[in-house]
Length: 90
Image 1 (cartoon, rainbow, N blue to C red):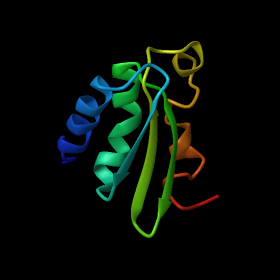
Image 2: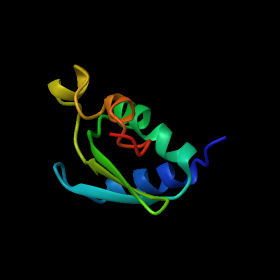
Image 3: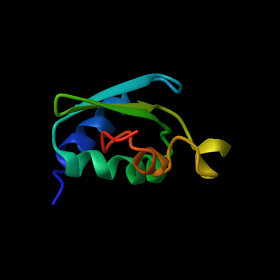
Image 4: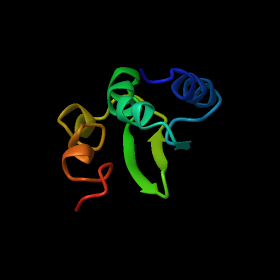
């Protein structure tokens, strides 16, 4: 079961940010990383990307409302997982 704490911390940090600002999350719990796309869709904060290095996932989330692109399956979709950004496969 994923820990809710990283996303609760992200929510708190985003509350102090301006629309368009970018939040960088450093996560080591893969279950938490896997929950980020859905959380981004639910909160209206676009997921810009995920990069994994040595077991640490750097997740970039932009503060803001839902964009047309994210609603149509853009960066906030699960495409990052299908294209291997989280799996380590090209």
